[in-house]
Image 1 (cartoon, rainbow, N blue to C red):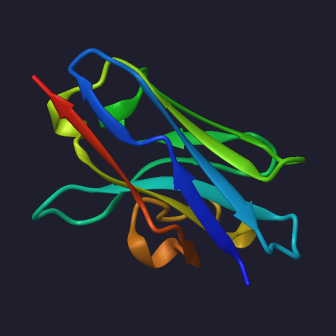
Image 2: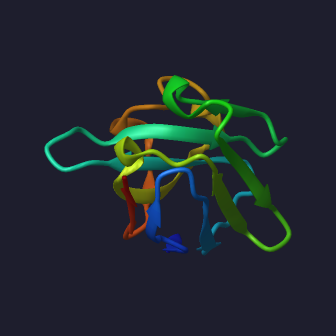
Length: 126
């Protein structure tokens, strides 16, 4: 049973930074892609950033240059460093994982995901 547990959310003022963490367990196959999604009230869940097992990354245009996704394969930990936060970044952020065969293919949409975490709230105020 794959489990993804997020932490690190909170409230911050615009221009500030937060670092989200995701602890992954239960994987029996080392070939996978990980990602961060977010969902704001009244909006669809969307992919923010993704990374494959070789460290290759993709980002949504709205966060390029501000967010950085990274992982420690040995510790099964995924991070999202968020800098220069804006009020429009306010959302519930979810850790997600899927099999390597689907890496970067339509990655920004929910059906891409095999496993979800429970989410962590990020609130950015003016």
